[in-house]
Amino acid sequence: MTRRIVTVIFTASVFSTVVLARTWTDRSGEFEVEAEYVGYKNGKVRLKSEKGKSITVDVQRLSQADQEFVAEKRRIADEEGNPFNRSGLNKSVKALETEKAMEGLGCREPEHRARLLAKFGGTMESEAAVALALNWLAKHQREDGSWRFDHREGECKGRCMNHGNLDGAPNASTAMSLLPFLAAGQTHSRGEFKSTVRAGLEFLVQNMKEEEDGGSFYEPRGTMYSHGLATIALCEACAMTGDMNLMKPAQLALDYTEFAQDPDGGGWRYQPRQTGDTSVFGWQFVALQTGRIAGLEIANETLAGAERFLDMVQSNAGARYGYTTPASGPATTAIGLLSRIHLGWKHENVALKSGIEFLSETGVSKKNMYFNYFATQALFHYQGEWWKTWNEEMRDYLVDEQSKDGHQAGSWFVGADHGSRRGGRLYCTSLATLILESYYRHPLLYP
Image 1 (cartoon, helix red, strand yellow):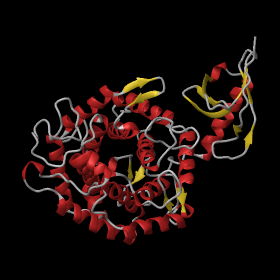
Image 2: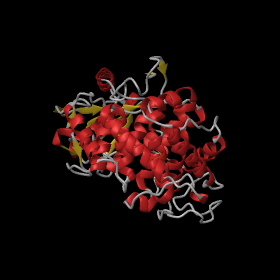
Image 3: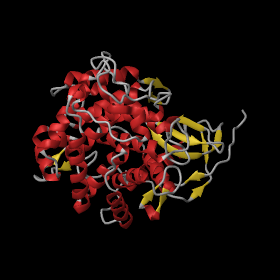
């Protein structure tokens, strides 16, 4: 029987740069292949040939020596630890005043929200703005449970201005609309808007396309942005409720996120497995984080790849980040720093401090809600005077700019950046609401 031999360099470990050649053999000894070990998941070993072809094989089909090799690699990976396996994420976290354990996204529960709101700088006015925004979003849900960036259909009947022009991305627009409800502690099983949330989640689950590599929310117009956003929404709902009916679609979505990662650079972009950019990367990375909070499976190799991508686009020793190459874009820097915080950078890290200072000096944007959204999260976790100054301006600006009259009451349309033009009033309202929910949306990572 002819043996297949392909030459490739084997990466010695997930986080190592030492490389060795390795030959893999099946149990019969008849077949062998030289390939790179990529990872292990659900009883399957992932390999990569020198031409970049992905090879997946049941671990039980490998020789005893190869099985022992895989077991050792898994043990080493466990000892090195997952970057997300830290206080505040998939483990229970400390309630910021009581020092008692509060699991996952328990900070969104009513008994914690008021305390966290006061502690981190929210006000009665900012919470009133959140309530108005949720009402506006609920009124613009379509009968099938979805939302559209062109919000004029349904009850609105064109009464709200500044609709988005991005058609054909209902997964993205539905997920963006669900996230503010979930951040406010509203789920499909409890809360004033539980029927709204349930209908939105059902729409997403029904729209998921099950493929060989997982469950996809990819849309030609929304691209991998749609997948990242929808995956976050499913994982948040799963984490908040423990609903077993959501665990399978959420895990399938995460599986597809891992499949879609650029196998070389470690990032994500518009198309699956394309060389990454920091913007699309940000949403996929948050999806992975949220999946960890929900107790779902994420391969260590995926997170190692994410770190590799950040290393590739960083500048100023990690204080700034570019889009696809090293640079100093404000929004991309905010995404990069937020990701580094989640990956375990210490509060005293010099590059982190320098980057946070850069965001603070850049200041609240009156035109770019995308930058405001990610910068708010990074500054929130860092805290200190930079957070206090940023929060006061950001909070009061949003409260003042929220529409107060007519059918638009409770919504926002801010700026003229690319996202605002494409997503319109619904996009701006989602991001503005999530910013005003920052005080209790996620556990503080530097308590």
